[in-house]
Image (cartoon, rainbow, N blue to C red; front, side, top):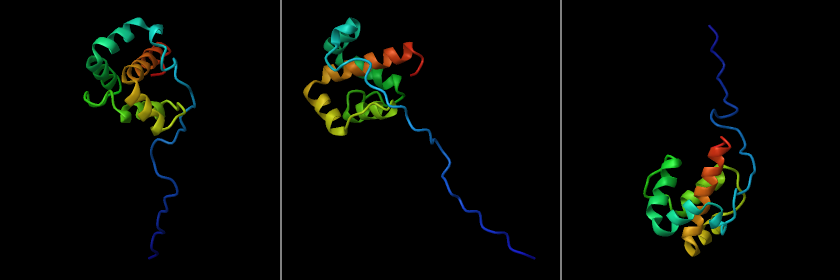
Length: 113
């Protein structure tokens, strides 16, 4: 009786598609391109952070974090770095949060979210 040859796994199963490179749909300071998001980010920052986390199926407490911005950026192939994400989140948290929400809204409208 001959022993079966071992199976050699060459590639791991899983998601292998390379994300498409894209850009933010709006700039960091384009707050007035969606006035409703701007108002929500200004007067109800926590509500907007929770909406973003909910949109991304993440914990509602991490919507305004550097990790969430980095996750969103890498998920959609938006160029940048963790350092840039940190700077945007620390020095202009409302603008950063509004930019993510505007981007989500526009991607939902294009059916690519």
